Image (cartoon, rainbow, N blue to C red; front, side):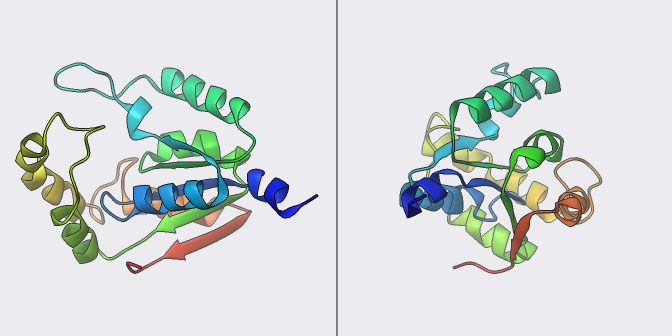
Length: 167
């Protein structure tokens, strides 16, 4: 097996708090190793206004289809219920476990995300809510929480890395 073949077989899950650098790392890995990319934000929510979480069975079906269609991939997100679907198929996980103050700074410096917001202004209007959401990471007990991410990380039996700083 040559090096490019072994890289294609990498199946990586990147997870952590909002604005921890998940998307940046995922894009970097995908570009460097020609891996397929799935951002769980794109299938975790409905298109209703306001958006609502999609049914777990619908998101799970989309995840399983993506995994079947690609030999090597990076899947990123903060949804532990969806990460649990991906985990058994992953060869490695990366926990973006940055301090909350770094995530807050990253959020403030985040470029416009046209795949999530119609305009930079719409994104900026959401910033206060996002900063509040990020700040609650250690206190929440939901599928987006530090506690849920830590449990997922601790239970994973394969290769795992925790990143605790930018860069």
